[in-house]
Length: 110
Image (tube, rainbow, N blue to C red; front, side, top):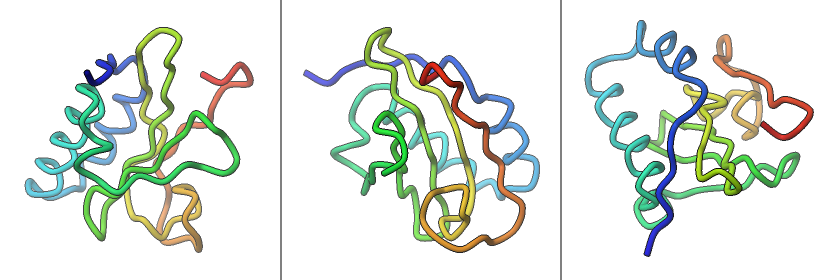
């Protein structure tokens, strides 16, 4: 049985990103967020761990779109930390491309 997670932080990042995203990009991103929430994302998407933080995962939504989330297993929740281009330094995948839309983790891991 998949773990169900509740989105508790990062909707501001999603809203900011959505302002300039196409309808197709928004649709696939929302599908990915639902998959994270219902626990099926690991079956559907390529997911990479962040070497700097064991609780953060990068979801490859499309070749040109990634979602970075912080999983909080203790309270069955997750937080959006980044939405945007996969080549951005903020996504933890390499060189910077454009301004990142990212929220830093707090010192207590959340």
